Length: 248
View 1 (tube, rainbow, N blue to C red):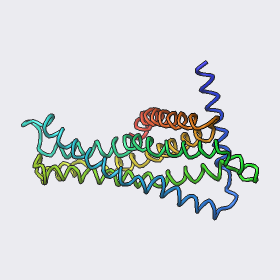
View 2: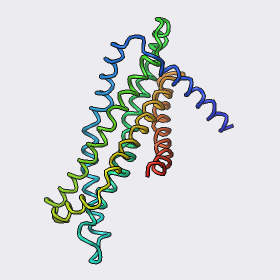
View 3: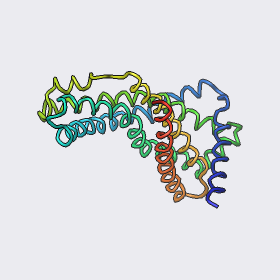
View 4: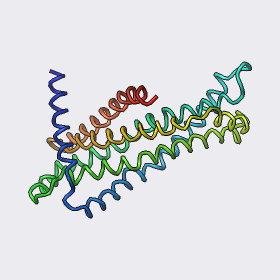
C-alpha cells in the first residue's frame, strides 16, 4: 500500500514537472518573476547562511584543535580538517538541509495558499499554464542562486575559523593558513557547487509539488509545508550519498 501511494505521488510529480518545463507564454513576464524569486528565495537567505556558516566554521576549528589534535600531529591539521568539512559537506549538503526548512516551507505555503484561495484555478480559467507561470521561476531562481550561497557559506566558515585564531587564540593564524592551503584540491570546491544544483532543484520542485497539489483548507496548507520540508530533507540526504560516490 505504501509503495502504491509513493508511485502515485511520484507519477503526479512527473506530470506536474512536465507541465512546468513547457515554454513560458510570455518571456518578459517569466524573466520578471525569475528575478523576483531569485531575490526572495536566495538573496534573502544570505544572512542566515553567513551567520550559521561563521559559527560552524569556528566550532569545527575549536573542536578539532581541542579534541583531535595531539603532539603527534602537525599544527596545521585543524585548518586542513575545517577546510575539508566546509567544502565537502557543510557548505553544500548541510546548508541545503537548513535552507530546505526556510525556502521549502516558504514555497509550499505560498503555492498552497494560492490553491486554497482558488488563485491557481483563476489562472487556469484565464488560459494561463499555472505550473509554468508559478513553479518554473522558483526552480530557475533557486538553482541559479544556490551555488552563490555555497560560495558565501564556505568563505564565511573560513572567516569563522580565523576568528577563533585571532580572537580565541585557539590556533595561530599561520598554522590555520598552512592547513587551509595544504593539499588543496580545486575539484572539492566544484563538487560542492555541482551537488548544490541538484539539491536546489529538489527543494524547489518537491516543495512546489506539495504546495500546488494541496486539497482542503489552511490546515492542509500547514501539513503540506511540513511534508515538503521532511521530503526535501530525506531526498537531499539520499541523493547526497549517490552524488558523493559519483563525483568523488
